[in-house]
Length: 79
Image (cartoon, rainbow, N blue to C red; front, side):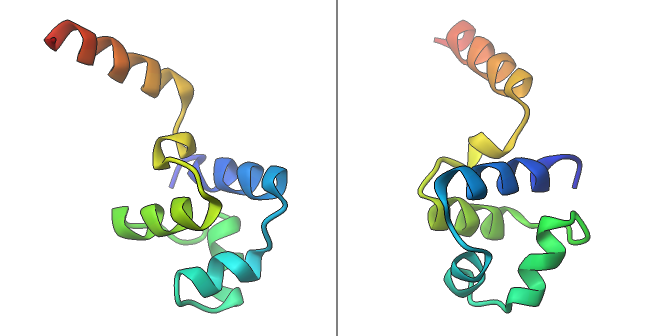
């Protein structure tokens, strides 16, 4: 899952959101989220969006900023 789990944890801690809150929001167990936070589970797009919603952030915040910059540059070129 690359470093997505690290970014999720960074945002979760910065916002003061509990692991239990995210697990409940995703209709999962705290043990599941513990595995997520350690990078032991590969998350699908729907689950990533649920976690982003639980943290009240855009899902793009979980990905490398270089990816976001590249994506934004390509979008500007298309317009």
